[in-house]
Amino acid sequence: MNEVKVHGFWYSPFTLRVVWALKLKGIAYENIEEDRFNKSPQLLEYNPVHKKTPVLVHVGKPICESMVIVEYIDEIWPHNPLLPADPYERALARFWVKYVDDMISTVAPLFRNSSGEEREKAIRDIWERLKVVENQYLGDQKQFFGGDTINIVDIALGSIAKLLEVKEDIFKVKILKAERLPRLHSWFKTFKDVPVIRENAPDQEKMTAFIKTLREKILALSS
Image (cartoon, rainbow, N blue to C red; front, side):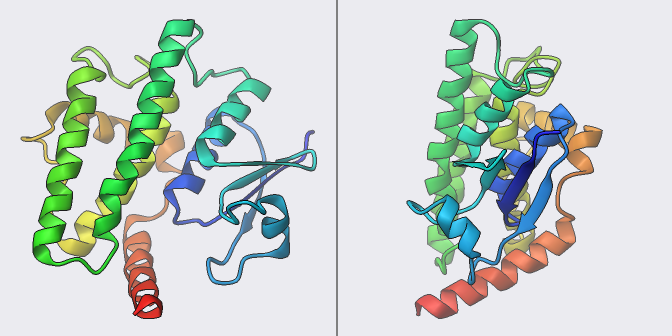
Protein backbone atom coordinates (compact mmCIF):
# COMPACT_ATOMS: atom_id res chain seq x y z
CA MET A 1 0.00 0.00 0.00
CA ASN A 2 1.26 3.47 -0.83
CA GLU A 3 2.18 5.46 2.23
CA VAL A 4 -0.14 8.45 2.72
CA LYS A 5 0.12 10.99 5.54
CA VAL A 6 -1.86 14.16 6.22
CA HIS A 7 -0.45 17.01 8.29
CA GLY A 8 -3.31 19.25 9.37
CA PHE A 9 -5.56 20.77 12.01
CA TRP A 10 -8.67 18.75 12.88
CA TYR A 11 -10.78 21.93 12.97
CA SER A 12 -9.53 23.42 9.69
CA PRO A 13 -11.89 23.54 6.71
CA PHE A 14 -8.84 23.17 4.46
CA THR A 15 -7.67 19.98 6.15
CA LEU A 16 -11.28 18.77 6.02
CA ARG A 17 -11.22 19.02 2.22
CA VAL A 18 -8.30 16.58 2.07
CA VAL A 19 -9.87 14.21 4.60
CA TRP A 20 -13.16 14.12 2.69
CA ALA A 21 -11.40 13.49 -0.63
CA LEU A 22 -9.41 10.58 0.81
CA LYS A 23 -12.46 9.12 2.53
CA LEU A 24 -14.59 9.39 -0.62
CA LYS A 25 -11.87 7.43 -2.40
CA GLY A 26 -11.49 4.91 0.44
CA ILE A 27 -7.78 5.67 0.83
CA ALA A 28 -6.19 4.84 4.19
CA TYR A 29 -3.86 7.47 5.62
CA GLU A 30 -1.97 8.45 8.74
CA ASN A 31 -3.22 11.63 10.37
CA ILE A 32 -0.56 13.89 11.89
CA GLU A 33 -2.21 16.55 14.02
CA GLU A 34 -0.29 19.83 13.98
CA ASP A 35 -0.22 22.60 16.58
CA ARG A 36 -0.92 26.03 15.09
CA PHE A 37 1.41 27.66 17.61
CA ASN A 38 4.16 25.02 17.51
CA LYS A 39 4.34 23.49 14.05
CA SER A 40 6.40 20.36 13.62
CA PRO A 41 9.82 20.39 11.92
CA GLN A 42 8.40 17.99 9.34
CA LEU A 43 5.63 20.43 8.37
CA LEU A 44 8.10 23.30 8.02
CA GLU A 45 10.33 21.08 5.91
CA TYR A 46 7.45 19.91 3.71
CA ASN A 47 5.97 23.40 3.23
CA PRO A 48 8.87 25.86 3.56
CA VAL A 49 7.10 28.50 1.43
CA HIS A 50 3.86 29.08 3.35
CA LYS A 51 4.51 26.93 6.44
CA LYS A 52 0.81 26.03 6.48
CA THR A 53 -1.42 23.00 6.63
CA PRO A 54 -2.69 20.87 5.08
CA VAL A 55 0.18 18.92 3.58
CA LEU A 56 -0.32 15.52 1.97
CA VAL A 57 2.74 13.28 1.95
CA HIS A 58 2.51 10.46 -0.58
CA VAL A 59 5.40 7.97 -0.78
CA GLY A 60 7.61 10.60 0.83
CA LYS A 61 6.67 13.46 -1.49
CA PRO A 62 4.81 16.47 -0.04
CA ILE A 63 1.95 18.28 -1.79
CA CYS A 64 0.63 21.58 -0.41
CA GLU A 65 -2.57 23.68 -0.74
CA SER A 66 -5.89 21.98 -0.09
CA MET A 67 -7.46 22.02 -3.54
CA VAL A 68 -4.16 21.19 -5.25
CA ILE A 69 -4.05 18.16 -2.95
CA VAL A 70 -7.65 17.21 -3.78
CA GLU A 71 -6.86 17.29 -7.52
CA TYR A 72 -3.72 15.21 -6.90
CA ILE A 73 -5.76 12.63 -5.00
CA ASP A 74 -8.25 12.50 -7.87
CA GLU A 75 -5.49 11.90 -10.41
CA ILE A 76 -3.62 9.25 -8.39
CA TRP A 77 -6.79 7.36 -7.43
CA PRO A 78 -9.22 7.93 -10.34
CA HIS A 79 -12.09 5.79 -9.00
CA ASN A 80 -15.06 7.75 -7.64
CA PRO A 81 -13.94 10.79 -9.68
CA LEU A 82 -14.21 14.25 -8.14
CA LEU A 83 -13.56 16.18 -11.35
CA PRO A 84 -15.80 15.85 -14.43
CA ALA A 85 -14.45 13.85 -17.37
CA ASP A 86 -15.61 16.43 -19.92
CA PRO A 87 -12.94 19.17 -20.39
CA TYR A 88 -15.50 21.99 -20.43
CA GLU A 89 -17.29 20.76 -17.30
CA ARG A 90 -13.90 20.23 -15.63
CA ALA A 91 -12.91 23.82 -16.43
CA LEU A 92 -16.23 25.07 -14.99
CA ALA A 93 -15.65 23.10 -11.79
CA ARG A 94 -12.19 24.62 -11.41
CA PHE A 95 -13.62 28.09 -12.00
CA TRP A 96 -16.13 27.66 -9.18
CA VAL A 97 -13.53 26.18 -6.84
CA LYS A 98 -11.47 29.34 -7.37
CA TYR A 99 -14.57 31.48 -6.83
CA VAL A 100 -15.18 29.72 -3.50
CA ASP A 101 -11.55 30.16 -2.45
CA ASP A 102 -11.68 33.85 -3.36
CA MET A 103 -14.76 34.12 -1.14
CA ILE A 104 -12.70 33.24 1.93
CA SER A 105 -11.59 36.88 2.21
CA THR A 106 -15.22 37.82 2.95
CA VAL A 107 -15.35 35.28 5.79
CA ALA A 108 -12.17 36.59 7.48
CA PRO A 109 -13.83 39.64 9.14
CA LEU A 110 -16.03 37.22 11.11
CA PHE A 111 -12.87 35.89 12.74
CA ARG A 112 -11.40 39.27 13.62
CA ASN A 113 -12.55 41.44 16.50
CA SER A 114 -14.96 43.28 14.23
CA SER A 115 -17.71 45.63 15.31
CA GLY A 116 -21.34 44.64 14.88
CA GLU A 117 -21.56 46.87 11.82
CA GLU A 118 -18.47 45.30 10.23
CA ARG A 119 -19.82 41.84 10.97
CA GLU A 120 -23.16 42.66 9.36
CA LYS A 121 -21.36 43.96 6.27
CA ALA A 122 -19.29 40.77 6.10
CA ILE A 123 -22.45 38.66 6.28
CA ARG A 124 -24.06 40.71 3.49
CA ASP A 125 -20.92 40.20 1.37
CA ILE A 126 -21.05 36.45 2.00
CA TRP A 127 -24.73 36.38 1.02
CA GLU A 128 -23.96 38.16 -2.25
CA ARG A 129 -21.19 35.70 -3.10
CA LEU A 130 -23.26 32.66 -2.20
CA LYS A 131 -26.23 33.96 -4.20
CA VAL A 132 -24.01 34.05 -7.28
CA VAL A 133 -23.12 30.38 -6.75
CA GLU A 134 -26.78 29.48 -6.24
CA ASN A 135 -28.03 31.35 -9.30
CA GLN A 136 -25.20 30.59 -11.71
CA TYR A 137 -24.07 27.06 -10.92
CA LEU A 138 -26.45 25.18 -8.63
CA GLY A 139 -29.39 24.30 -10.85
CA ASP A 140 -32.82 23.28 -9.61
CA GLN A 141 -32.25 19.69 -10.70
CA LYS A 142 -28.91 19.25 -9.00
CA GLN A 143 -28.59 17.29 -5.78
CA PHE A 144 -24.88 18.13 -5.66
CA PHE A 145 -22.63 20.31 -7.77
CA GLY A 146 -21.52 17.05 -9.35
CA GLY A 147 -25.13 16.14 -10.17
CA ASP A 148 -25.96 12.88 -8.39
CA THR A 149 -22.50 12.53 -6.85
CA ILE A 150 -20.20 14.75 -4.82
CA ASN A 151 -17.53 16.55 -6.81
CA ILE A 152 -14.66 18.94 -6.17
CA VAL A 153 -16.94 22.00 -5.87
CA ASP A 154 -19.02 20.27 -3.19
CA ILE A 155 -15.83 19.60 -1.23
CA ALA A 156 -14.56 23.17 -1.60
CA LEU A 157 -17.83 24.89 -0.66
CA GLY A 158 -18.89 22.25 1.87
CA SER A 159 -15.81 22.92 3.99
CA ILE A 160 -16.54 26.67 3.99
CA ALA A 161 -20.22 26.06 4.79
CA LYS A 162 -19.12 23.96 7.76
CA LEU A 163 -17.03 26.90 8.99
CA LEU A 164 -19.97 29.27 8.50
CA GLU A 165 -22.11 26.96 10.65
CA VAL A 166 -19.57 27.41 13.44
CA LYS A 167 -19.59 31.20 12.97
CA GLU A 168 -23.39 31.11 13.22
CA ASP A 169 -23.13 29.43 16.63
CA ILE A 170 -20.42 31.82 17.88
CA PHE A 171 -22.12 35.06 16.81
CA LYS A 172 -25.75 33.86 17.10
CA VAL A 173 -26.56 34.80 13.50
CA LYS A 174 -28.00 32.82 10.61
CA ILE A 175 -25.97 32.96 7.39
CA LEU A 176 -27.20 29.98 5.34
CA LYS A 177 -30.84 31.02 5.56
CA ALA A 178 -33.39 28.87 3.74
CA GLU A 179 -35.47 31.92 2.82
CA ARG A 180 -32.46 33.78 1.41
CA LEU A 181 -30.53 30.89 -0.17
CA PRO A 182 -33.09 28.09 -0.60
CA ARG A 183 -31.15 25.87 -3.02
CA LEU A 184 -27.83 26.24 -1.21
CA HIS A 185 -29.52 25.61 2.12
CA SER A 186 -31.07 22.42 0.74
CA TRP A 187 -27.77 21.41 -0.91
CA PHE A 188 -25.78 21.78 2.31
CA LYS A 189 -28.34 19.81 4.31
CA THR A 190 -28.11 16.97 1.77
CA PHE A 191 -24.32 17.21 1.53
CA LYS A 192 -23.60 17.05 5.26
CA ASP A 193 -26.01 14.10 5.67
CA VAL A 194 -24.01 11.91 3.27
CA PRO A 195 -22.55 9.23 5.60
CA VAL A 196 -18.90 9.65 4.56
CA ILE A 197 -19.18 13.43 5.00
CA ARG A 198 -21.10 13.28 8.29
CA GLU A 199 -18.83 10.64 9.81
CA ASN A 200 -15.68 12.60 8.97
CA ALA A 201 -16.77 16.11 9.95
CA PRO A 202 -15.74 17.61 13.30
CA ASP A 203 -18.33 17.60 16.06
CA GLN A 204 -20.21 20.90 15.82
CA GLU A 205 -20.23 21.71 19.54
CA LYS A 206 -16.56 20.77 19.99
CA MET A 207 -15.50 22.75 16.92
CA THR A 208 -17.50 25.82 17.95
CA ALA A 209 -15.95 25.85 21.44
CA PHE A 210 -12.46 25.36 20.03
CA ILE A 211 -12.75 28.03 17.32
CA LYS A 212 -14.16 30.49 19.85
CA THR A 213 -11.19 29.92 22.17
CA LEU A 214 -8.72 29.99 19.27
CA ARG A 215 -10.17 33.28 18.04
CA GLU A 216 -9.77 34.84 21.50
CA LYS A 217 -6.17 33.59 21.73
CA ILE A 218 -5.23 34.96 18.29
CA LEU A 219 -6.86 38.32 19.05
CA ALA A 220 -4.98 38.50 22.36
CA LEU A 221 -1.65 37.77 20.66
CA SER A 222 -2.29 40.45 18.00
CA SER A 223 -3.31 43.19 20.43
